Length: 176
Image 1 (cartoon, rainbow, N blue to C red):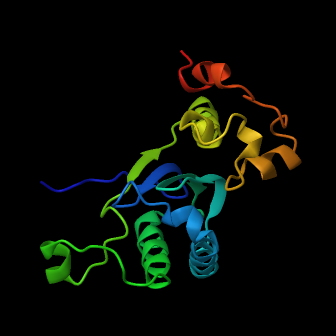
Image 2 (image 1 turned 120 degrees about the horizontal axis):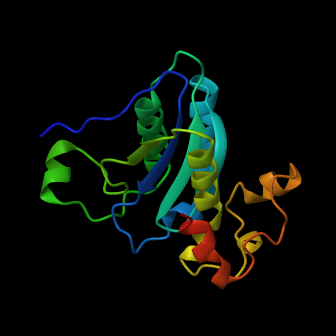
Image 3 (image 1 turned 180 degrees about the vertical axis):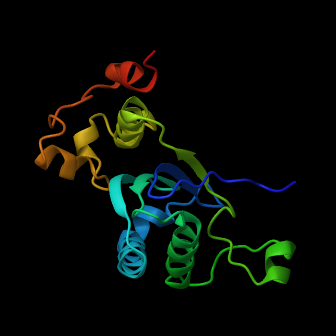
């Protein structure tokens, strides 16, 4: 079965990208390496980061590509590759990954959703920012350091105490 992705020129997309070993904390342990990889790729193949959150074992992002551009896949491939190369080779490798010369850092694929309209956009931006709270990493969204939430607060898009208590998460994540 071939996996099909949706490509829209200049589109806005929501992504989930996971580590292979979901018990690892590599993404926050090596946050500077991840940031360097993203900066490098952005300089070579620009894109706009609408929202981003890095959790210990996965990340969520909303990107908008330049007009006429559909190639988010090569950007993710390069980010994952550059991050992996920055780490020592200590991970366990399956026989298949050994045979293919792959690292055991990332899940092979990532999940993508094409943003359809303004309501869909807002929902996914909120989802990105509330994710550390959803996973129980903090009790207030503002307390997670690896999130574009802080930039959004500085731009006046959120109040610093937005979704500040766990009970509020249900209304953000599960709106009708």
